[in-house]
Image (tube, rainbow, N blue to C red; front, top):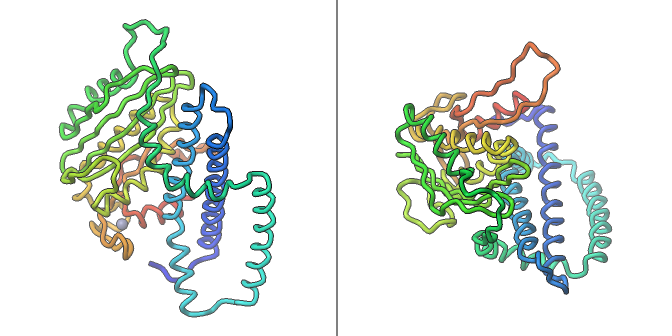
Length: 341
Ligand SMILES: [Zn+2]
């Protein structure tokens, strides 16, 4: 860990902090929309659907926030070291902080005037969101499709095709349907389990949206193959707790693609974890790295994933990022910062 932070690092830190703050405000706004729906006098016929949609937004934003916490780690460590040395200009910080607090207070009062008791309700909602979400995620809309019954279902068809293609080079991977694929008004849903021998088991609740040709992951859970636990509980193994956080960021990138490609991205990503405990990090070439007092030593638990590349003006530099490359969490963050990804 480098103690000095270059102006470039600090710039990046500030950008990360800004981003996390933006997410906080998104969480707040998702909560507000959600409480509005809960508090509405008239519960229309779409209530269950919109309740579920709003709750998904809240859940997604909270997940994003925990993932972004990872990016702040370097900056926080730096702040802690600086605090120990007590090299701050406290007068300046105090006056800046007071100014910002006053502005935030005004903003909040205005918001509160518009949303009544949104704040208290918000915390109740947050506390029960996970439970309610779990209940709701099993709601499947009644089938009223005009499709001909012979049309193959999206997940059933594409997972089968993927497995057929992959079978030769990866015999240690299994994909099972825990909940059979069911048609909904807008596409289909299913719950699958991906099993990579000696590495991990992933439960995924997926939805295919026919209209936009996109994929949605409603719920996921990654755990050790050795673990006996109830689904959706936190993994007892630190490495898998951390991988669940990483997955939030990874899925966001992988789901930008159209549905079939997105599904392939996800399956390929999990397949790339087959060497989780044996493959050294691409950057430091070591197996274990001290991560933090909470997580202690971790193997390279990042595998790079498919990501849409921004269009570069310089055509000479092909920006194809290879996928499935192992990194430690910290090594990956450094690598990403150096390549401005
Ligand atoms: Zn490393």
